[in-house]
Length: 424
Ligand code: ASP
Image 1 (cartoon, rainbow, N blue to C red):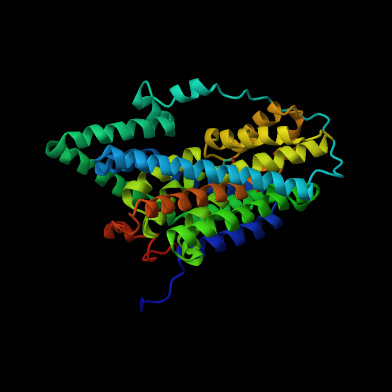
Image 2: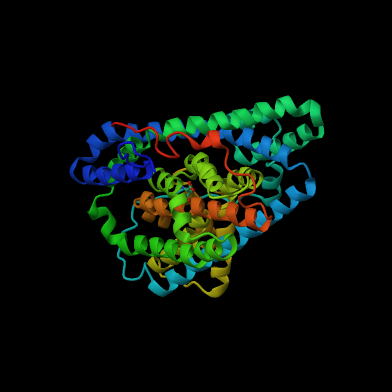
């Protein structure tokens, strides 16, 4: 369409950053990559996470105030939660079944001497639920406690909408704040190719082929399970329920998926995911509620990992895994998906909770820790894709798909048509 000189789209630039990062990571030493390239990636993650708390606060307040009727919010919440639980349970089952078939831990002779891992006690359910209510919302914001921020923002939004006309100016403030944070995301995204390069160079330099080889089968099983989950869950839902072509979907979510893959933080992919699903037709109300919520409690990739890792570790230690243990893993996998933070390596901490429940030595955690970053790439990408699919599915079920098109003003900038380029 544009007749200006062709410019590379942002996802294409990010892929180039990724490939160059891998190549550099293969030839340059881990020390050099750690000293010079890693900070480039850390800067990217920090910049993008800087946007998350104000963005979530503003969009949820504006979204909840815009929904007006409580019944609608209740319906959206129920449908969203049903989707989360169902897809997460399917994810753990896929992980368990695939690991049982492929047996990634059999024949592995890994020394576990000297490995130590700290145990994690499963959180108390009632306390966890109580903790969703922040005693001090400012503290929740400062600490970035997403569930607490969401709770406060939803209540605030409802209270604001009940003020009627007199509340409009404040509502407008939050709408504008959300739009401003999205603009900020777009500005930060101009730096994404360089950030991706830094992250990949560091990751690859750390995990030379020698480190990956003994656990290659585990890595392959994790990636295969993630791909199967996309094929049996997301593609049929996107095609059958949402009614858009999978190709359009994947093109639409390429940016948040790439951010997730390279940063291993679904929190870092949140601002971009919000925009991507809006562009694909998710309604503002549904997206602004379900994307931040899903980011916090819907983690299909992490859930798959619980299944795969449990079977793997049991095999390495020769511990039988009867069906009742596998059912425990299923339950724990769903809980882990809720409790895991959207930051790198969080799933590795949760896996120790699962191991404790089924009496697998915690040294097994240390066994997989060396390659966790690679597994995390698959986990986080899937976590983000699951949230995107959920927002679209619930929008469709609410009859809201494409109802309130993405705001024109939000469309411009680095994420949209590529009007800016980054000369690195
Ligand atoms: N890194 C993942 C995420 O941010 C969580 C995990 O470690 O499983 O979604």
